[in-house]
Length: 125
Image 1 (cartoon, rainbow, N blue to C red):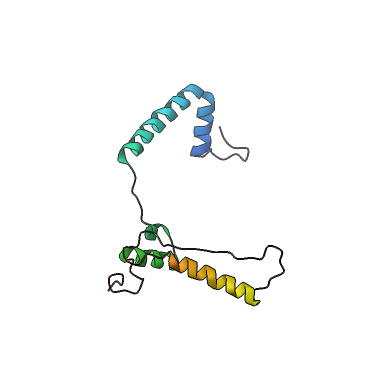
Image 2 (cartoon, rainbow, N blue to C red; image 1 turned 30 degrees about the horizontal axis):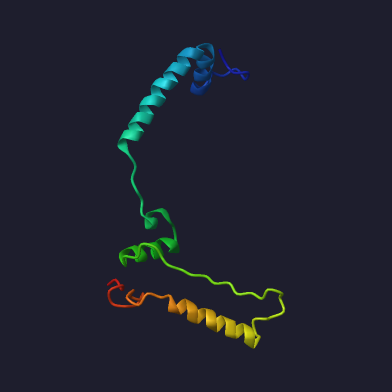
């Protein structure tokens, strides 16, 4: 048996033809392959990767530095200030006063015993 062009069939074509002619045997062989593969994969477990091992580029370097410094997760805070009616601009004194008040309030929530990023116990050699 050959192709329309007259040459011999490749291995994939022969396997496909056999699978079409022997449907139940092909499905049985497939199950006999897939089930042990799933059991083996489940039994071997998985490897937990650190953030620095999953990332690429400069992000990898930053994650590695954070891991070496003992920082589990970076903390961040974002505050959005905007006028309700759009009449106040960022350059207006009233807006600047509001910004200063919010900054003072946010600074007041800071923990005093947490070392800063440049303190000796946080800097890696």
